[in-house]
Every structure is written in C-alpha cells, then in structure tokens.
Amino acid sequence: QVQLVESGGGSVQAGGSLTLSCAASEDTYSRYCMAWFRQAPGKERERVAVISGDGGTTYADSVKDRFTISKDNAKYTLYLQMNNLKPEDTAMYYCVAVSGGCSVSWRPLDFPYWGQGTQVTVST
Image 1 (cartoon, one colour):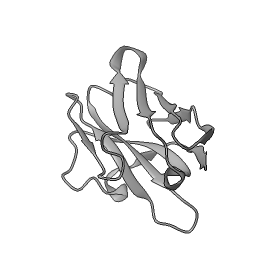
Image 2 (cartoon, helix red, strand yellow):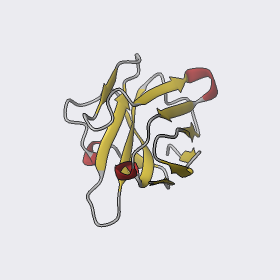
Image 3 (tube, rainbow, N blue to C red):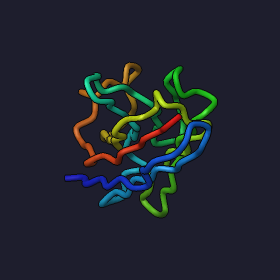
Image 4 (cartoon, helix red, strand yellow):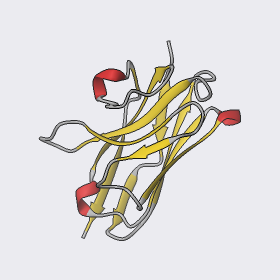
C-alpha cells in the first residue's frame, strides 16, 4: 500500500507562489505515474498536472505556463511549483499515484492511491 503525504499548502495573495511537496512511503517515482489533482468547494475534482515514470509531463490548460510538476526519485518526493497564483486556483490539492504508465485521459478514477490533501487559498 503506497502512502502519500502532501505538504506546502497555505494562503497567498494573487500573483504569489507556492511549492507543494508529496512524500511517498516507497520508491514510486521511477515506476509510477504521479499527478496532482485539486478540488474546490462545490466542484468536481480537476486534474492539474501529471508526470510519468520517465519524466514526461502534461498540464491542464488552466495551469499551463504557471505550474511545474517535478520529482526527485532519490528523495521519493513529488513537487508542484505554482507561480502567478490566481483566486481560481483556490482548492484542496491532492497527490495521486498509479503503478505503471499514465493513461491518456488521466482521470481521478485512474489513480488508486491518494494523499489526504493540502489546502491552497489565493486571495485578491
């Protein structure tokens, strides 16, 4: 059972930056597809960014050119660097994982392992 623990959330003003981290209980990063999802109150879970075992990345259009997903295989840690944050980025952010490759659709149901989430709040 893979365990994922997110950290780094907080409150920031619009235009600011935050870096989220996700620590795994084992070496997932070279063999797993990892991603960040987010969920705002009253809204469905939304994909943010995904990274494959070999480092390939894909981003949601809403965060492209502002967010960067990366990982440190030696530290078993996944990151999400978020720049130029907007109020609409306010949400609970979740680190997720699935063994093997990333699906083209990378829906929430594709990922069996989820962290507890870390809250990001962006004010105007």
